[in-house]
Amino acid sequence: MSNSKPIKSALISVYSKEGLDPIIHKLHELGVKLYSTGGTQSYIEKLGIPVTAVESLTGYPSILDGRVKTLHPAVFGGLLARREEAHLSQLKQYDIPEIDCVMVDLYPFEDTVATSNDESQIIEKIDIGGVSLIRAGAKNWRDVTVIASKEEYPIFQEMLNTSGANLSDENRRELARRAFKVTSHYDTAIFNWFNTGSEDIAFKQSIHTHETLRYGENPHQSAVFHGDLDKLFDKLNGKAISYNNLVDIDAAMQLMHEFKGGKPCFAILKHTNACGVAQRDTLLQSWVDALACDSTSAFGGIFICNAPVDLATATEINKLFYEVLIAPDFAPDALELLKKKETRILLKAKDLSPASRSFKSLLNGVVEQDTDLKLETTEEFKLATNRAATESEKSELLFAVKCCKHLKSNAIALVKNNQLIGMGCGQPNRVDALRQAISKAESFGFDVNGAVMASDAFFPFPDCVEIAHEAGINAIVQPGGSIKDQDSIDACNQRDMAMVMTGFRHFRH
View 1 (cartoon, rainbow, N blue to C red):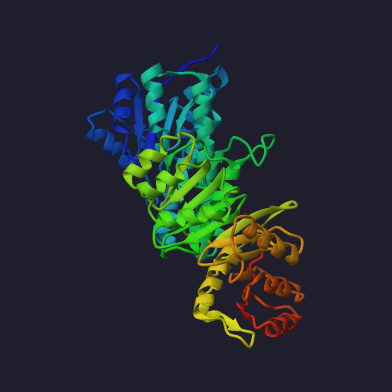
View 2: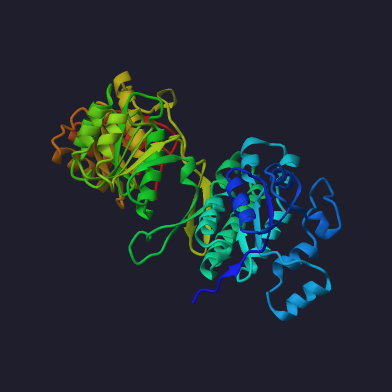
């Protein structure tokens, strides 16, 4: 049977006062003696509620510019004492009152890092006493109730409204669990700030939250997400986001970053690979042509666009089963329609830019690298062949590069009229990737003749040039860098084909 413990006294020392009033009034109504410090004490006094200054327990005022207020045996003894004879007798001996509840909201370290580069200001937002109070209360959860952040205010208020001052073991233990989650995230944020360069502080601060997922890639695998999706999206509809959803969403965000700010573009991804991409004058036509790229793979896919979804586009999208739809905004009538399918995940993207750093677990460690954010331009293309690419071909080649870099290696992208008509990916050799791309294009009724081709890495042999020419492809973009580059260049010259090189490889393993 649950063991309830009454709250007779509470120490309250919080940064955020939002939502505090009803809790203070409720504790007073329940006859709880209140202790407090500094600004929180003044706040409670303005509410007309009796409160005792912590200084009256410690015999010391707040010192060192507020760095030391609660760090004293008179405070921590009352929190850490087990409610049993040996400990209680010591409290009595040293005239230390029991403290049955501690309520804290820490200095906003992460918010300060996000808005200031002033190291002295950031350092002063490292909470010492608050974290110590939280840990003490949580350690002694069998006898003490701990509220560790403003996020727990509503939970605590509901508990008080339901159970009065007598909280159950289950409630106290749950609050203690949340408390250690708060302190672990807080310490991680501080560690990341000390452990990082200025260019990626913001990213590393984003990994402070944990979310337990239903499962990992497969149901027998457990999974946890470390990050803060609320900074990236407003989730407008749908079921809980899964591990596989997250992986695909990340890939979709990286792909659409290529088309940020341009004409309306729609992309469809499946298992992180772009299987449909089109850019048109209207979002509706972009959707229609993206779906035409591979209508089979689109089923159950991840959809993303760079323009607000209107009703006409939503009506067409709504005809197909999908997992996630990401857009910078949704027209009200479009959102109303799409939300009728309750499980479909709708995400309003606050920013289409991906993180600047990426991480991957390997062996018994983790590798970290810069995210591949290179955005080529046609001005950077270096002509390698006798025949120059036309302006139209250059535009198409650039589109092809953007698509190709978001396919698993080895990767080939075929593009025609700003539409991904064929893709080959994840193949052990580049010839297989090219043959796959041509086959896919033809299977969905596309005429490859006149298309352009992008490769994510160099051609070690001229065979891909020969196969491309046979299919009617006359313009190619690739990074170059092979000791046998000239063989492919010669093969192009013999066939009056244009080849440009970018100097940037885009492997995606």
